[in-house]
Length: 504
Ligand code: 5AD
Ligand code: SF4
Image (cartoon, rainbow, N blue to C red; front, side, top):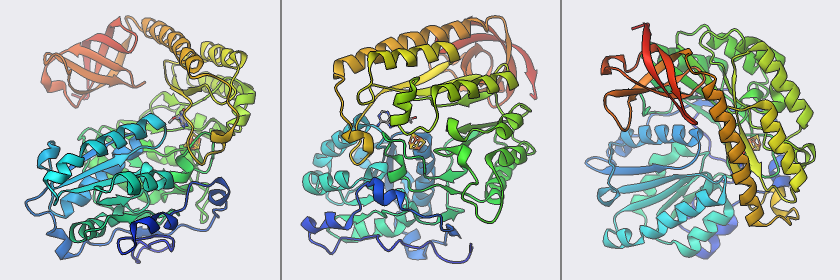
């Protein structure tokens, strides 16, 4: 590993501005399971973000950018880096796209409806681009990593000026310069993941809660999921870099950090120079003076006893675990390539509950996976009843081009899939309400985030278990950790009253 060289550009990277439009597509690698799985275990280079050249720092003088982010926390956090890069170039953020000089969409590819929204937005902006030809319209994030998306833009949305992917965000200043000074669409998407780039500029959007990447990519290849193709192979950041970032956040007074990774439980497996796991990282993070540490997302397969042991020590490690199950039926789990069974999952849940009795478990569930029968769906319902999640994110299966599940036979109608989603949500909401009801009269620790959206006399915050709670109190409590008594539990939120103050 080296710290000195510049971030490399993968040999398959392409800057197609000099090519004819019809030739663009052949330079891209489609999400392809066989090809993607060939990725090796070679050591990833860790490099520092290089200083931006002076001329590029002047690029955005007196200019404005408008950034819209879709999708998960990884994207939200990438956007904090993108904002940092824009600011390094002298740009100012603006909320009104009509007066922006650059409009950028940081996109999500996880389900079709996320993509449809983006295509709708790009189409809508055609008029604005016509009125204002100097406007730069760009697309980045997971959709850019899909060949089918890039082809569709080349074909049907030629007013787009810039496309870049998830692996080359650090190249934004150079790509933007290209887009500004060239008439052709600038497309640079690396089909293979690049280096881990440390110390990128970042403008965090919250002064209280921060996201910190601990790893990038995913090697799990669940058969329905596009992420391993759009985000590349698993690459862990070095523990010392993660810990240094957390230490800085502690010094800046951050009260909560969420550690991010597609599969945080695999953290460290790719670090060839040491034996260091996610449990080791959590043990080290426990010593850092940040009151609240969360993490997302866990994969049940890699969730080990060492981690349960560390989490049971609590302290600044919150007793909330998001543990996506996806289905309660072992055959469906097998076809999803989740690599665990219903029984293994329930055993893990049992162990977690035994070690952390007041743990709150939340999950992700997909209904209508190709060929899912009513009986198999019933097993998802019974698993939900058994685990008693406080909250679950539920989705109708959405085929993603290039993933194995997209070509599996599917005889379940859309209507039936929607019907399963309604039935599942009914059960989840009932249980969520019952779990909240059981908290009536309890006093909980709350990090106060700000005024409630609907009433300035009411504050909103989160419990250790990440439940949203509202209670009347003065602004002086914002940013503090206080004790609140739950007086009115509801399905998704709690209402309470201030009891004592902690750390005020
Ligand atoms: N269709 C529906 N839901 C999906 N997810 C991932 N891929 C798909 C898909 N193709 C869901 C999973 C995952 C969450 C982030 O999104 O439940 O855990
Ligand atoms: Fe997608 Fe998560 Fe499975 Fe990785 S572990 S393939 S991100 S669902």
